[in-house]
Image (cartoon, rainbow, N blue to C red; front, top):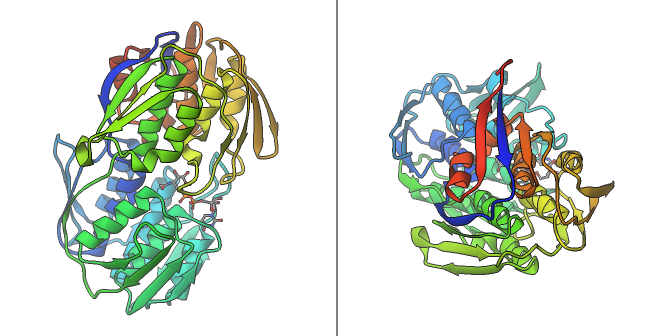
Length: 427
Ligand code: UD1
C-alpha cells in the first residue's frame, strides 16, 4: 500500500508547467472512435484515468502508439468489440463517454452502467434520453446499457440539467447523425469547448461552441486529425491554492487563464496577488501571497462559468486555515463533503448543514493520518498537509493518481516536503 507523507510548513515557491486536462482528454480520446482514420493527440497527461480510457479503446480493437512526449496515436480502423465492460467502467465513470461515439459510428454499443460513486448517485438518464430522442433503442439490462440504431437522426434536445459528459456524449453522437441536432441547456465548460474544437478538426459541423445552445449538422463520416489538449484548469487551480495556503509565491506556465476566471477571482478575494500573461501555449499565471494567511471566502459551486465543484474541496482546505468564517455551498453533487471529516481530524472547525459547510478558519492545522475518499478530496488533504504542523499521512492515494500527474514531483519542485512511501500490506 502506498501513502503520501507530507511534512508541512514550507511556503511554496517557483515555476512549474501545467499538464493537459483530464476532463478534456477523456472525451477527445473517446471521440477518436467517430472516425476510421488515425488521430494524434498531444499533451496527454500521464494519469490513471487516461490509462483506463486507452485500455477501453485497446480492448475494442483500436491500435495505440504512445511516445515519451505524451503524444498518443489512435488507429480505430479495426474496432471489433464496441463494448465497455464492467471491470473498466467501475474504475472510471467517464467510460460512459464511449457510448455516443460507438452508437453513432457502429450502430451498436454495450456499456456497463456506471454505478454510484463516492460523491453521489450520478445518474446517466440524460445521456440515454438524448440518444433515444435521436432514434436509438436503449435497454438497460443485467447492469449494461445496450443501445442500437441503424443511423441516429438529428433532434431538438433540451437537457433538464446541465451535464458535462451528457452534453459531450450527445454532441459526439450528433456529429454523425442524419440532419441537424440542437442541444439546449448544454454545458459550457472549457473542456466541452475543447472537445468541440477537436470534433471540428475532424470535420464536424458545429455552431454555438462555448454557448448553452449547440447546433450540429451531421456528416456521413469524419477524418482523423492532430490535436493538442488544453491545459488542466483544475490542476492549475489546485497548485494556486497550494501556494495560497502556504503563504507562497508560484508561477504556472502553459495556463488557460480565461477558463480559470472564477477561481482567480476567489483567490484574489482571499488576499492573493494574481498576475497573468502570455497567450496560447505560452500563457502563464502567477500567485503571490506575500507570506500572508488567506482570508476566508464564501464559495457556491455552479456549472461553468460558475465556481467549479472540482475546486470546492481545495477551497475548503484553504478556508479551514483562513482568517474568518466561510460558507461553502455545493450545488452539483449531494455527497461531496467527505473530505470535511478528514480535515476535521487535522483540527479544522467545520459544521455541515445540508449542502452547506460552515468553516471557522483556524490559525493552524495539525498533521494526522487521513484517508482520501475521491479525487478532489484527496487534493484537499494534500493541501491541508502542506500547511499543517508536523506530518500528514494520506492513505488511499490511488485516487490522486487518477487526476494529478506526478503531483509529488511537482510539489517537491516547488519546495514541498512530500514523499510517496510503500507500507507493508495489500497494494
Ligand atoms: C463532469 C466532470 C467532473 C465534474 C462534473 C461537474 C468529467 C470526466 N467529469 O462529470 O469532474 O465534477 O462534470 O462539473 O468531465 N446528472 C443527472 N443526470 C445525468 C447526468 C448528470 O441527473 O444524466 C446530474 C448529476 O448527478 C450532477 C449534475 O447533473 O448532479 C452534473 O453532473 P455532470 O455534469 O453530468 O457530471 P459528469 O459529467 O459526470
